[in-house]
Amino acid sequence: MARFKFALEALLNHRLHQEEIIQKELAVCACGVRDEKMILARIQQDKEKAVAEIHQKQLRGIAISEHILYANFLEGLARNMVVQQEKVKESEKKFAQKRDDLIDAVKKRKTIENLREKGLAVFSRKMLKLDQDFLDEVGICRFHKGTS
Image 1 (cartoon, rainbow, N blue to C red):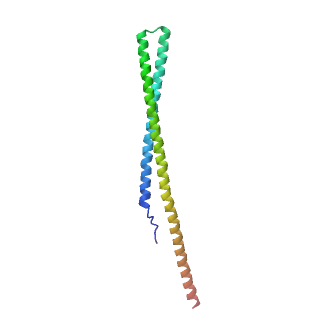
Image 2 (cartoon, rainbow, N blue to C red):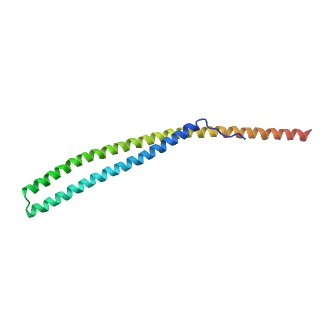
Image 3 (cartoon, rainbow, N blue to C red):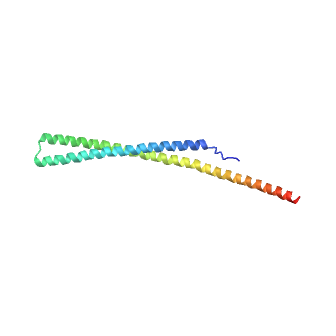
């Protein structure tokens, strides 16, 4: 019996492979976003801790030199936060682009799969027609043998 052979099977396999690669890249991007956000959270915690420390020291009295050190430290943390916020935005942008790439890859794969399904349906109808024609022919032959 004949078997269905999809002419674009190699393309479908290629599209599946591409989709898997993009899924892995998307997972890497998601980890990158998480990591960058964790770094930002750590910087924010350091800032809050330093602000609380300076507030406590101010209540007890603090030397000007120590106050200047804290001010410089807080200024550095503020700059680090700005830089880290940009890194978070950039990693989120990469993630969004990769997600869009994945959506596109899925659409392309599904298009080929739909073509395959349509081809399989046409093939199945042809096979059913051939089977029916064969059975009709057998029936006709038996009928003629029985009447002769």
